Image (cartoon, rainbow, N blue to C red; front, side, top):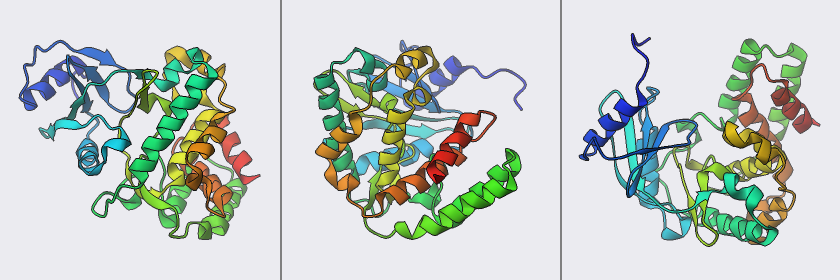
Length: 299
């Protein structure tokens, strides 16, 4: 454990120096769950200080392969000094779609979701033979099956889960695993909740690719459908109450209209259920809501 509390401002300056920028450049703190995020005059800076260096370097690798239609702002620099890791991307306009949602009219929401579907289609179509795969990364989904069952066993010991319920989950996962054939695979975003989407009313940007890898495309669909189901779980604390009041009922239909291939697998429901359980197992804790999510998936 460090002797002194972590200083995010000092680490941001440290990253700027590493990037060859003036450490006194004015920075504005931005919301982020996994990293420290800052906005500069013409760039966005994210700092990974948690010790698992390499996540942001993978993002830069993914970004190099993307077509412009994937709507990623573009990387202008990245690196690490053995203590922190940083990535600089071009600063773009717009507000987080999750934050803006409650103030949008229905037609504005539909246009935003159609733009998101178009960006995801472009990302999913990226030829990425040398990019990370599921075995390279852990959250937010842990696949394939051997890793998933290992996660279940660790969660059962840590939570703890009732042995009978843990056995029921394992049987469910094993029974439905054959749904994961080779169809419907590609480069996925990995975490496309609406705080990772910027929207200005006309233009959309897709952010934060650190969990992007080659996987089953339903990885992204499962998260988006979960946002519709419990949007308050995918937003910053300061507007959870607004997210609960947001109307997401039409989003699945808008996604299907704009990107029907994403819904085309004959065992779509089995894939979504397994992916939902996989992601939820990484989040288990004292909150009984997560266990309720798993029970509903089993049903």
